Length: 143
Image (cartoon, rainbow, N blue to C red; front, side, top):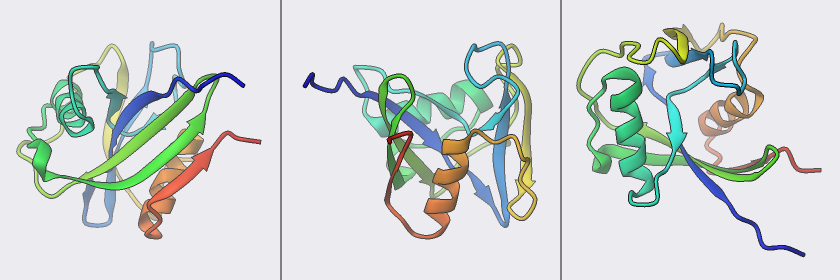
């Protein structure tokens, strides 16, 4: 059996009261038209926290110190390739979220947790639910 080559990803679960920040993907070739969270691949020269802080700044102009990111969930998922997603909640951040990648994001908005849009990417919906239930690990896309 071949060894897995995991692709590491970082995801930001940004809550404000009973709202969560979501973005609608466009022109990316992956899940376009569906909602996700601020996220991205972790580069080979950075830690998961550093990657998350970088993505938050690049996508939404948020300044988050890596040490202020709390790991709240890990998801091992299969989506054509093996991936491991690190989901972080910031203890604090500086700035108001704004869409800095309009070519890749058609909406960046706060959503009430009781009325999330139906078109959230399924593994993102699962990670939000699992995190709110206090689960630190889940799997998605496996038989």
